[in-house]
Length: 625
Image (cartoon, rainbow, N blue to C red; front, side):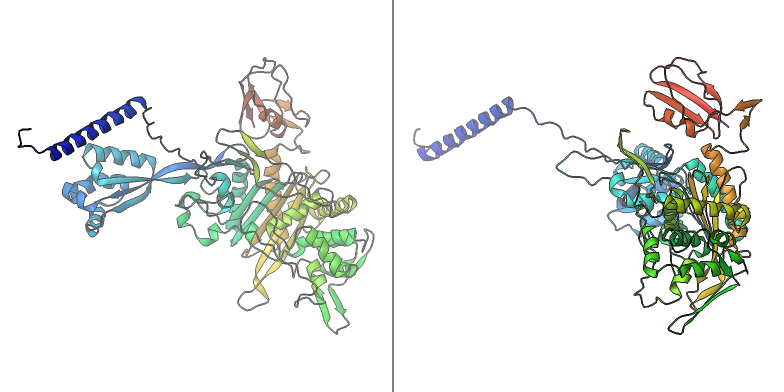
């Protein structure tokens, strides 16, 4: 103030100091009286749902994998040779190759040394890197993975997941949004749902062993098998050979990944005659008592001058529709086709599902081919030719779908592969209920067809499918395959197939098997019918169906098998001995007790014993043989 300090700069300095002080005081006050911000929350990991069989056996489960990468320059400073020596045994890569891989990318900012290492390898590598001061030079990128505990089992049905976490085939693909729901950033994360399939893994495994042996015996190119519950439409076994190991799907061939029962269309041959005869009868074109003369060839000249000729393998003489199916007579079927107009005949076939996709959960379903009368390829021979299973293409799924109409008194039921869906806590969000379609045939028509099919199994072309103590109806068919190179039909490649429905008096199961391009014997009655018998035997025993030769069960003496009524629980544990697995189903649905089943067949031992008071969360263990 003595003149050395000027007033204006001093005022400016004081003003700035006061302003700064006020700023500090205000911000301190705000900080002091404001709630501190919450620490950032960890992002919830979305888990992909599992795929299980109908009994809860895991077929596809989520797993964590890691991509292991390094910064080459940093590794170089820490010693490439030492690094390679430490990690190569865990990675399964030769030390020399590992060193060369890093040296070749020394100018890169980052490289992956190995992708999709499992949890065990990840933990080992992490420990090694941490212990040797390498953590700053490496990186682990967590990626969603999938493990398939049963490897090849029902591989085309289950499907597989790609490296990007999306399904690429089967249920993994068609139900991607259920297994891993799309996320809304403005809503809480939604965890994946668990899908319980309709197939039984134990039954599937038993039938796959049979069909693999058949593939080797017949030297066939491929084989298909579908078994479904007639009343519910639930597919309990689904086989397409050759199959793939889902844990190594990148090594699988296109043939192994091909889902033939859903995607492949083919001419079924004589198996199709059951649907033709049912259509002729139901429309009133023919009756059960009408007879037709088979002289070995159907020959007819139409108004246009075209001469139609369809040969038959035998001279069957005078036969009814039942006799025609028993001997698989082409001549009689062609004659029957004259008694129905083309449009009503085609309409019946379409109402059975031929010519349209079956509508199951399988991706890539083929609609097959049912010609229109206006089609340029339609001719005077089309109707009689379709009647014997040619000039029409079907899929294995369509054949089973159509057979449900015959098994259910004329009413088809929708096929399905999904039994139920649960959330990640186990709460059921969907349970399958049968979806019945419009009636196609009168019940009297299907009763007659079932009796015809039973005759085929007893004394006709399908007699090798007869299992004796359970009534079974079958129809066989052998069809020449198309020759894609020379046109027309191949002289060496055949489709051999057989469809079965059992028991005849009260149908429960539809079984259909197709063998393609067998070498040597190709006649379906000789190579497919015996497989039907083997497979049906396995199914009957697995499901605990009653059979004439099994009135008692031997086990350290004799155990009488009780009636087929399902078991009920009241206040005490009942005597389960002699009961089949099917009778136990109501017990498995109980939420207040836990039932553990060991083995297949009928109950021989139980714990706790009969008469024990039932308590909440009680565990009951049953042993079946």
